[in-house]
Length: 236
Image (cartoon, rainbow, N blue to C red; front, top):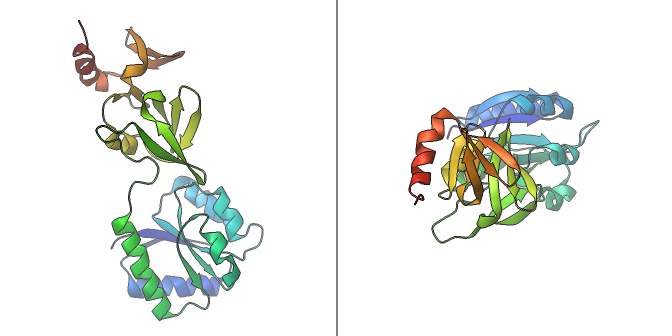
């Protein structure tokens, strides 16, 4: 299975061992080897991986402290000599917890667990709205929040994040707008590279813009025809 990962550990020998095990046992792509938390944060800011190998006992920031700073969708395989953090580790998106020294047998077991996880995984941030479904769940930090569909005003793309705006709150979701678009059905419509709107919430359309609550949202040429076909079906 072709997965991508990075190793974060302050011990060169520990990184070398995991790197060797990856090369010997998997078809994974090792995108980076980071020797401290700050180096890892800098890399992950501009690069995406499927999961990370993360040591717990590191200087400056421990693995646990680093995990709280990572995007909430980040999948983690903890690597540590300390078993006492095992329970705490599952407060995050933890796939496995490897105790050092890591043996080949234990690593092969972890490979199976990791690959099965990605085979079976479901969309993490937004669960798709099915016909007749009036709510879904959004992961915000460590909490799954229930969102009522009819209360959503729009989704706004912001670089690596999407801002979900309802009638009473805003949430940041670490996903691409395109991924969310693929999961949602009417009344949600893409109207711009940066916007998906709930057309049942719009109040008027004027000069290639729509108005939802106090928000003026552009309708781009790319999405205008498909959007107006939907609107024309609602015209008298």
